[in-house]
Image 1 (tube, rainbow, N blue to C red):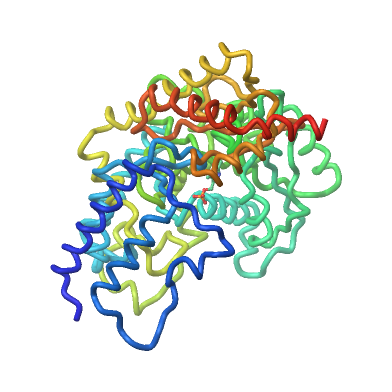
Image 2 (image 1 turned 60 degrees about the vertical axis):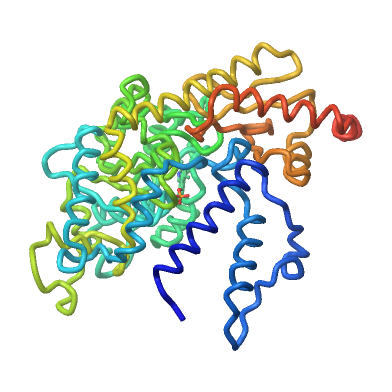
Length: 465
Ligand SMILES: *Cc1c(COP(=O)(O)O)cnc(C)c1O
């Protein structure tokens, strides 16, 4: 029945199909959601399936699943494929360790710790720093919030929240902040959304004004989330200026670098994170700019005691050998935990920090090429700014939502839209480091050709206006 060697052979065969599909049909054959269950047999039944039919249905699924690694996928803050990272992830699947103890994970513990230690050094954290690999950027933000909450009110770990804790983040920050406030018992209504400047960065003056107001009302400022790379514009909150405030009022400062915290690897762009060493926690996703498979998220803390205080729990059935430094379950949210470190380590080990730096810098070069194109062409309006890999634009006054949806429905290219203040626009992200400048210019060509063939798109806007 099951034989790993024949399944691995099948895996190789299926991957061949996938790779040739990516080459020949970079935008997958789209199935209308309402027709999904009729189009492919996804049903599960009592009896087994013969091998040929099993293979056939797997092929159908591969062909019609959206292709995120191709040169026409720009919809998300991830894309492309770093093959050395894929290799590491496949090995992690075969090894199937759980990262909670040294007894079960062995050298994988050291692999995870090496990444964390080097990352802490790059951020500029001290000798007491450490971190862990949560399930993603949202979870990293959640763990940071829990640590900030516990640091301000240690009793809440035992008694629950009894004090009016207030947290701060910018209006342009990631939506996980509001969910996390609810999970953490702080409450969505106790978040203060601080206005941004005209380029999407948190306004530190407004932040301090709000903190002073809250203090005067007997409330307790607890936690500030600064974003390094906002989800839509890719803006960087001024960490240094925010740290002046959090230090003055003794508030936990977290840097949400899920998107662009990876700039710690770039000598050229690291300055955008200036002041990060003054934060209490810092997170980044290797599955965004660095292109590892989903998910690979890292949270770092300047003082590992905080991580331990908030997340450790004794469990004699689990922690039976070795010390806390090797039993990583003492500082993680989960119990059983997937090995997300190996794929990042294989990538890093094989191409070096210099190679990671090139991956990052290349994306900025691609964004520069896209911005130059948009700026030099009067049919386009640019809404985003330099030092960002998000290039936000509108074309010929066409409604961006209608355009993105039509491009998707006609399987032309996959790209999304976003909003900032009163504008809505196409958000084109040059996050796939496998792309070349030609691929970027090709995207615009493809869009322009499509619009030329669909003049009705230009009319939609006229009707609205
Ligand atoms: C993507 C992103 C997140 C969420 O990360 P997930 O891994 O998708 O949970 C959080 N913050 C910012 C700024 C992001 O861009």
